Image (tube, rainbow over the protein chains, first blue to last red):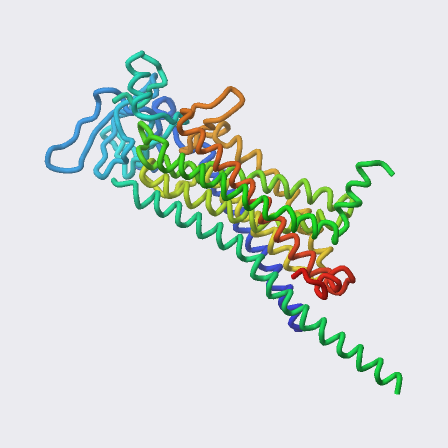
Length: 149
Length: 56
Length: 249
């Protein structure tokens, strides 16, 4: 094989590998993540089987977070306004985790009826503002005050 | 969690990528011009010697 | 001759383009430096921390402009690629292929800064949600365009093949943009849209300056890459020979 042909062959293989990789990644995304998470309503309506991993998304219900004194264990309720799911988690929560915050919990339903999370991610919203502005908005009762500290 | 390392890393990596992308064409142009100039002078020299030979 | 055609004819002439771009590049770099200086000053020193994200909001001043530009450059590549394919204008072929590395660089910046923002904010460096995945596919498309170009020996054929791939890959652009609306994603929705912005002005201004700064960077880098390509392709032609024997380097 001449050096030019060899170079061409390698280049074509790189292209094929790249396109293949892109397609695989896209396919993966289509398969798993067209719906990145399911809501508590979906959980209730579809009666998802226990022991199957999925992502649960929703808001952390107000006054529902309770932490264990002696460990990292924490329980809270994830709600979408219509239905709610009890969640147990044992690990480090992201900075943005707080009551009223949108979160995504990855884990599975247990026979006990609660959701055992292996990982908890906080969902951020599209609002950006300084803390003083957020405080002022909250005082004025503006719905955009979000996190609600 | 302190955010400083994440911010610092973001700015450093971005600066590095931008610097590298900006320097790459400058450096390869310098190299190309040097190569072409060498070839150019060599070609001229052979032209001159060709003419010289024709005359004699 | 029709004036539009005349314009294309003139800018399409490599020696003219080479000289014109050479004059423009220093101004574009100057614009980039000034805008970046203002943007960094506002973003790192003047802008307040965010009420939720805290200081990590400062990553946004790199992430958002880079992500915008990564898509804009791909769009530009598709447009110049289309012109190159239909009208066979060589400058457009050169511009198409010269855009790809710059676009790839901004895609890498968008992915890396997004990941570094995600760790403290979301609690993870990476998730396979529709927004993040489609932006990663964009990086592979850029790499594919560059690799396809390098697969051919004849530069004009190579540029046309790369242009075709650029056009086909442009379907990914609306997917990236609308991914946050079409699917449930961890990535938040757009803050800036036709109905205004949900970013406080103190944080919006540094973002705007950085966005324009990056556009100047793209212009300057694109033109210097295009000049290099022209020089390499035309090294046997008279205008390059004259350039080399002259004072200009």
